[in-house]
Length: 136
Image 1: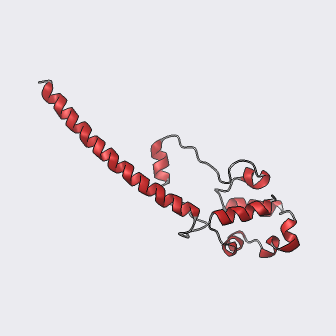
Image 2: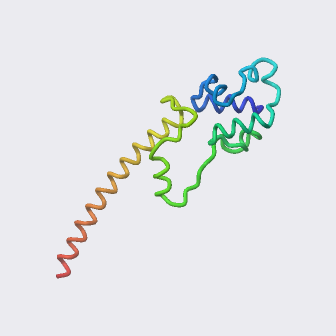
């Protein structure tokens, strides 16, 4: 699989239309048609793609190894929750986008977890009150 093949895979898997890709990167559609599809992209064009789609893994794009997208490591749960409070969809706000769907699912999961935390906090308060009444 060539770099161009991987680019086409990335945009397809992420619900990005080719037209949006060409517009956002400034690349010509002719780079991805006919015989030109087999030619290599220049370094400047690869840099433009990687800076436009910040979640695209450069290792995967260049070598085909590793994950297609970058994985962010979080130092604590609060950092993770704050970063998923709003979607980072600068390159594709389509509701068909894989990232948008993942964001919506994670947001619903977070709501359920917050409800569960609230219930557990209430139980904890009632147990604390019971312990206080026992230790008179």
